[in-house]
Image 1 (cartoon, rainbow, N blue to C red):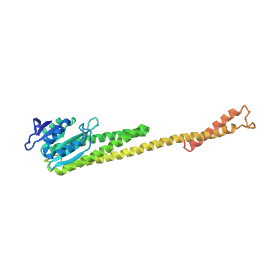
Image 2 (cartoon, one colour):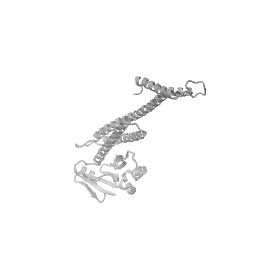
Image 3 (tube, rainbow, N blue to C red):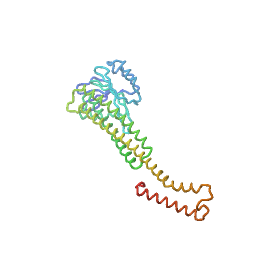
Image 4 (spheres, one colour):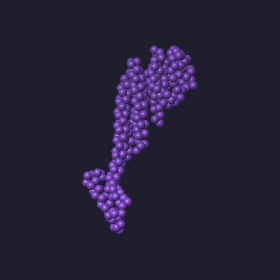
Length: 309
């Protein structure tokens, strides 16, 4: 367990939790193995509520359910989900009160960033920190959205060149990712809206309402990307159908060209003695000559009708 005091001078580690003065608040970090101590740290909320919340969480931080719960008139439990540089999703869970933010520790949370925000005068309440974390998360969601759009462009270009079977699995994977991104943005918008309804101070800083509006815009962008992915799937299917049609066209043309020759060979293959040219030395050359003429005539006919294009 680690305690920090947040002031305009930055983060200062303290021995134990203190009642902060005006314009300051505290941050407490709990490791997963210390969660049992939360009942004492947040005793005013009631141990039953704390146990219920912790019972639904994964100590490894692999649960990404965005959450907003009011555990006490002045205590809220909030769950964000964020993306790391390697595009893997991770959870940020914290308890928010008027003078303290209790964070279920996550190694990806950067204290240096929080210290910078404090020195720049952006942090006067725990709500400010929750808002700035929300803005960071929103930027990371936007980055994921841009990566998805780049993948859509790349696959679309490949489809236009040569449709392949592996492209279908990639499109399905993109579809799953955009659905997850939309779900995450929707959940965060709900959380931000609830926090905006409770927060009344802005003091010249970005407000929760601005964050809600930005989230709505990102959500609209995600919906548009979702539509592009669905159009991409339709384009892929159309390209595959066109390719199949081209193959069937070639096979049909070959069958049509060879059909007259098959008819001739079937005729001369009958078991009769009295057949023209059957015993003549000119029979075979004449047969090949007629076959070449038939194929040439059929090709000329197809070319004039533009069936060979």
